[in-house]
Image 1 (cartoon, one colour):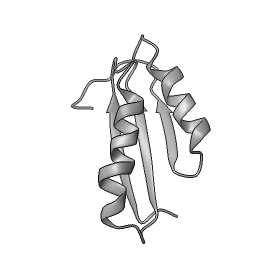
Image 2 (cartoon, one colour):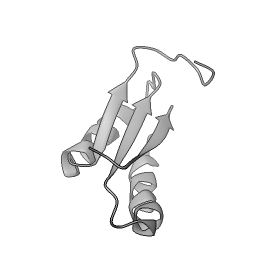
Image 3 (cartoon, rainbow, N blue to C red):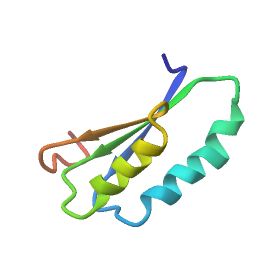
Image 4 (cartoon, rainbow, N blue to C red):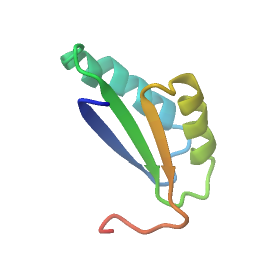
Length: 78
């Protein structure tokens, strides 16, 4: 069970997801290295290659990464 979760909304973010993931590992995670974390990427109906990139990240770090794919774009307020 994670001590904290980092939620990353994704909407047409192809090409920036790996760098976002790496920056979280580089900047955020080291603040509390003793804590268990999870990174949850929520794809809000992207129609680009975002989901494939997220699945690649998930394949590299199944212990800490979760991917949620929404069936369509529900928008920020929802």
